[in-house]
Length: 358
Image (cartoon, rainbow, N blue to C red; front, side):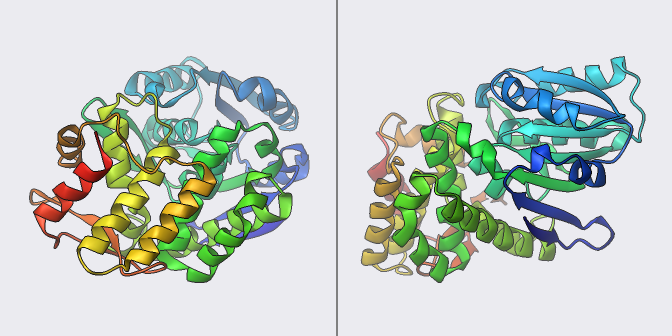
């Protein structure tokens, strides 16, 4: 088992990564506080893992809230369902919400925990690669709105992240590939050596070799934990973690959060960010080609032909990262060097979006 720490002074918490963590009662006892536990999952994950997890929380009162699966269900209405269960069972401020599932479950359970009695403890138990390397770490919680992705939410840090890598054995191949988009992102923003390693080991990752997946998860979490520890509320450096996301979120919101997985949209967004960086003169054409080849080998989309360019641009304009009416983007000064800027030619942005959209 690997143990990392998100350093946030008195709110620091561990990220535990290993095979079989859901079957370790002593570990769960140590990192899941409280007598009353609300276990939040969805209709896909709960039948696989909810019962064994609840059985190992011996001596606790465990109540389950099972939600519909998928990004279209990441709504205020489903957060309200979680809150209704907490209220109906008279859970107090000393309860703990446990998020068992992917990023959608984690974001909604965390948001409910942030809201209930002005904040209760919650634990992330991510079961998808995307959640294990990204959304479970850092305390971003919330839901989508028809007008934009993740527009409603709160920063609320978990008390622990428990990553059982064996849950990836049941992950559909498409979901695995979507998670690898976020892994690629970490190499692009901060770690050239890690990006090189991904190019050399992508087939091992797609084949779910445990050592390769373990390294990818650990390194991704290390990078995110370091950045979040320095900039918890995204006032500066943390914004680089959004590489590809402004482009990707536009795809998701323009398609009604259906048809595209989040990681697939991010994959296409990574290439658009790289292409715009090339147009701005900060990234070499051969580096953009390297990224395109890696995304293709991973099986990720490299364009969004089903989304009109004008629709994508309109959704980008209401992204959370817009400041003073200007879309702030994460661009690249080459592989391993991301930066945030609002200083780019508008014509280059429009041309880039048109080149990758319908």
